[in-house]
Amino acid sequence: MPLRWLRNRGVRAGDALLLIPLGIIAAVVAADVLAPMDIHLGPLLITAPAVTASFAGPRTVAVMGAASIAAQVAIGVARDVLDTRNVQAQIAALVVISALLVVFSVLRERHGRELAEVRSVSAAAQEAVLRPLPPRAGPLRLASFYLAAHRQAQIGGDLYAAVRTRTGTRLVIGDVMGKGLTAIGDSSLLLGAFRAAAHREASLDELVGYLESSVCWNLNDPAEADRRGEVFITAAFLDVPDDAPVARLVSCGHPPPVLLHDGRAVPLVATATPPLGLCGLTSRGPVDVLEFPFGPGDHLVLYTDGITEARDGTGTFYPLTERLGTWAPDGLHSPKAFVHRLRDDVLAYVNGRLGDDAAAVVVQRTTHQDDNRPGPPAGHEAT
Image (tube, rainbow, N blue to C red; front, side):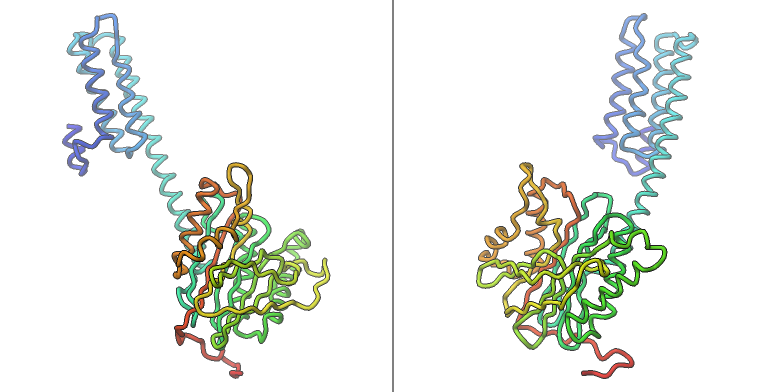
């Protein structure tokens, strides 16, 4: 009956995992029947449903428990001891423990479904907050990755986004101080403000000023009073015009992007600007905008400090610029290929265990121009 039920469930009789508990039952029955009368091996039958519970659902566990009980009855009949207290106690113990294993399997299956639902919600939240970058934006090709430090997490305080304007493309990459839901909320706030304002601000310094005001306005809320002075966001903002082979960068306390040009990797170090969210705790002078050549074939790597602060087994930081410099001559023309190589290399460097969330965006300028610029916002005249 157990084998017929398993076949009806679509399970192959030769399945290696199911052969293990079935083999245990057969071995225990044979050994017990052949053993001397003073040796009782029947209690070992409970290992069959116990092993099954490690990989199968409650119904299969129940079937294997029933098979173990039937095997114990068969042993009692074969040895003519079915009416003894010892065998009856063994049968009763098998019934109780098998029932408990079925209950535990039901609970495990329920928790598995709940975990799947939580992961589904987390994935939806990630897509809503940290939207995937478009593969193309005007003359740019884009690719990105996000690595959460905790395996069960989908998203944290690292952020990135790209917005098309009437004259080019603007990008942001940032890192919110802290972890958990608070960091996700701050990340969502900055991304929302950036997407709303990126196409309206005339210059990068005005955009940064607007975002600083947005973050500080949120922290001035009474509910956020205990966090004032304790929250900041490092960020790098990039403005790439469609019609000129240059790019402009503002860095608010963020690690310097790396430009790959003519087979060399060059960090772009801009004049230090305080992180967002300090809200008057430090003086914020004029925003320095670094303009640099960015022509067809050039790549720009934006990243968070989870990459450069990743450590190997000896405690050595990940040498990002050196790595990129060795890859530049390899002809990795696709940002997607670059992103895959960087992601795999970072994970291999830390043996799969990151100490902090990490994100990276690779931008390449091409000679091809996609006509995907947005029209003027409602109520605004084109300039």
